[in-house]
Length: 411
Image (tube, rainbow, N blue to C red):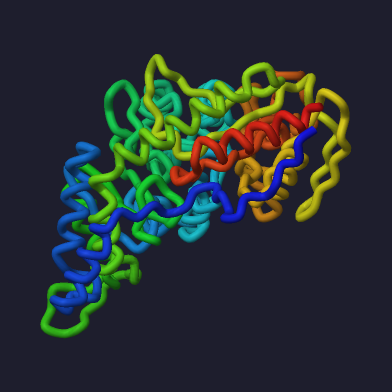
């Protein structure tokens, strides 16, 4: 068997891709001395975000997390309130609920899109009918079952906060994500589909909400000759320098999506014949932005694997593999993969929080598993899935090597 040598330069999971215009706008901020949280770059990225998504108003902020925090505040979340949240997501989706002293209630995932299960959401309202806010994330750039989720929320008069941090440019039935909730958030973090190195955006169709967010994000300063403050504020506004980078990235969004789509399709074709599947896409209703390509090992091909809180063990079996075995093999050739987001209900900080599956309250069922139809779907996907190197600067030749490495894990 031919030896596979490590790449000379690391192949990343997803890293920034610069084009040149970014530095022009950063230089413009420097030359005009608009280096703080006001300036033409900020105005322009807000305009571009509205133009792309179809949202009426955009507020440029320091991060996607700060956008989520202000969205949670705008939704009226108060200390002690229960808030329904996507379970299989990054912690930033959920932490802002905690900032306001509220209690996240986690809604299990469904297999079709790896996003919030509308059936489990309906069960959650049966258990907690008082809940009035639902925080929904779109995992890895793939929209969830938005119509079904929205129908459940409308039935129970609940407000949607849409976390579209990973899905800028993705559409559901022709409509851009980041426009389905009352308050919506996107991210320009360093690994996102376009980046500012940091930064985020609150999107809304409410002028009142946009104005509130702008005020809160600049320390809630009142319109007075001196520094007058009548409510708590935050230092959340985007820098005009960061906005310059985002401004230079926006024209390349569709180009990045096309590159990411090609990566996904090369993996899908190259991994044919293995007992694996790619992260699912509901092509009937949505077009993702293909931010990350992921795979999930079929239940019958799962090898032996044990994960602790911060470590793991696996044992190779012929014809089988495990996420950690594949991730180690990828790392050995100087490429970066990652585990699937560990569900929030499995995180130490949130293990005492309520968790609801499609079968009802899921805490008593977290060890129940039927191959391909787990009661705890998020735990199942986490156990069997991983994120593959998805950097849009990765060459087809490098991707071919990664595919070969994955194949060898099953030999």
